[in-house]
Length: 226
Image (cartoon, rainbow, N blue to C red; front, side):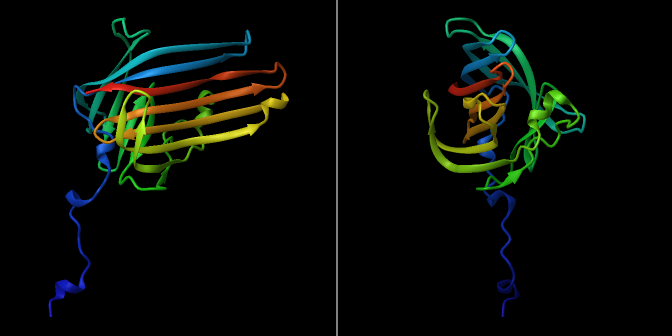
C-alpha cells in the first residue's frame, strides 16, 4: 500500500491562485484617469465641480526602511487632454507575499490581501493613527472582496476580469429633513494585468445649524494604460 495515497495533496505556491495579477508592478507601468471632483464648502455654501486627469506612473524601485522592495509612483496632473502633464505628488507601493501596501501623504493603507477570495475581509486602515482627528473618518473601515473575475467598463475601457474592493459604506442621519447627517463611502476596482481602474470616495457631513454640507466626492475612471 502506498503511504502517499493517505496524505493530503500539497499544492506548490506557484500553483496557487493568489490574485497578484490584479496589481502588477513594473517600472514604467502607468494608468491615466479621468477624475471628477465635487467639493462642498460650508463657509460660503458653494459646490465646486471640477474635472481633470491624473497619470500614475511607477518611476523607480528602492528599499524601504525594513529592507523590502518598494516602488515610487509619480503622479502627474492636467486639467484638459490638450495640456502637458505637471508633477502633482508621489506615493509608494510595497508588495509583499501577503498584501499590497500603499503609503500616500504619509498614511499607510493595505489595499489588497492575498489570496483574492470572495468575502475575504481585512482592516485596510490598520496603520492609520486613531488619535489624529483629521483622519477619524478612516476609522472602522472593513475591506472586502466582491465581484471577482467580473467584466467592468469604466466608460472608456472594457476590462474582462476585475475585482471590487468595498472599503466603507456608512450613512447616518437624514439631510433631506434638515437633520445632522454624515456619509462615508469608498470602493475601488482592480483589473488583471492593469491595477486600479476605478475609485469612488465620498466623505461629507451635513450640518443642521447652517443647513449645508461640508466634504467631497471623488470619482476616478481609467481611460488609458500601458
